[in-house]
Each structure stands twice: as C-alpha cells, then as structure tokens.
Amino acid sequence: MTGSVEDAWARLADPFVDGAYASFKGRVRTFVLHQQLLGHLPPPPATILDVGGGAGHQSFPLAAAGYPVTLLDPSPTMLDKASFRLATESPEVRERVDLVQARGEDAAVATGGRTFDVVLCHGVLMYLNRPETMIAALCRCVTPGGLVSLMALNARTLAVRPAVEGRWADALTAFDATGEPGVLGVDTRADTVDGLSKLLLEHGVEEVAWYGVWLFSDWMTIDPSDEDEASTAAKVELAASRRDPYRQLSRVFHLLGRRRPDVPGRG
Image (cartoon, rainbow, N blue to C red; front, top):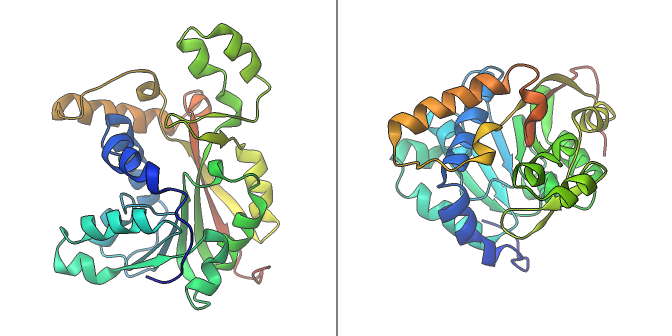
C-alpha cells in the first residue's frame, strides 16, 4: 500500500462491509455487476484496476477468475478490510491482487503510470461533487481498446424510493433533484447514462453498453441466508437489468465504454 490521507471513510467501513455488502441488496450488486462484466471483459490475464474498490467485493471474484487486479482506495480502513478478506482467499488469488492506497483522481501516479485493460469505478462517482476529474483520471489509466466500467446513481429515478416509502412530499421534490441522502446517511449525487457517456467520449472512450443494477430488491427485504430465495431473486434482478423498461427504473446503472485504439489518452 502507498500514500497517506485522512480517512474520511473510517466510520463507514463497518456499515459498508458488514452491513450494505452483506445484505441481499449488496449481494445482488456484486452478482449482477460480475455477470454483466463477464460479457465484456477480455480473457485473463487481462489487467484490472478497481478504483475505489473498497474491501474487494468486486475485485476478488475477478482475481479468482484469473485476472490480475490492482485495488485502489483512499481509505486505509477499507484497505485493512480488503487485506483481512484477501487473507482468506487461496494463495493463487492473493498473488493476483495488489492493494494501493490513493485517491482515484491520483490513480495514474499511484500506479506508476501503468495502463490497464479494464478500469472499474463502481459506487464512487455518487460521493463526488463533480465527476469530470475522476472520469479524466480513469480514462488516463485504460489501454487503447480497453474497457471502462462505471456504476452510478440514476438521476432519473430519484422519486421512486420516497414514493414507495410513502414520503410524497419528498417524492415531488425528487423529480428535480440532483442527488439524495444515501442509505448510510451520506449525501449522494446522481448522474445520467447520457451525461457520463458524453464525458467518457471527451476522452476517447465510446459507450458500448449500459445496464440497470437493482430494481426490485431496492424496495424489499430478503434474508440473504435463504440461499434458494436469494439466488432466484438475484437472477430476476439480472434479467431485469438487461431489458427495458426495467433497467431504466433501476436506482443505479452500470455503464461500459471502450477506449478507441486510435485516440491517445487526455489529461
């Protein structure tokens, strides 16, 4: 690990890792994103950079599938969680994972100017005031012909949650909102597929596909220990994520873009 920053995420590490990711909704996120990625990833040993990768919930399954992964996160506490979880993996998986402490905006410097075949940035943009600097940094780190994968809060569905919960006044306001309070009490900012696709294109990365991530599970409670129900429900979420109108109603979306081979990276 490298770098030294004040750990703004220390108090949220336990709620994220032991709460959000361990919930059925968290398991759906990991499963659905993984299945969607498999449809676009080059075969191993293509290299992967996971920016804001937290405790490795997305990275480690990819490492288990044979991909060398660099997990980059600004939070020492989250990286400690990643290190603890990584220690439970097989020696082969552990050898494929590097942990780097740095802000995503500094990824190019923190990784020694390397470029990667795939750059992931899932659930990070929503915590930034603006996405432009991070998008530029991600695009600097991807090889020509490489893949950029983003997961962001859907600005077009912000009224759904308060409406389902019967908070009608909040729902009216949310139609024109640009963000919402997150489930862990942190304010989050929303994006659109069109808006992020335009930003990627400014750096030579063209949209290749987009999906929803979760829809039904965002409004209900399912016991993740009930393996049969959880597995079937996750398959329903995956099917919904790939087709309209369901994917358009997802609370978050998954956008993938490919860097044009003939366009150099831009700072």
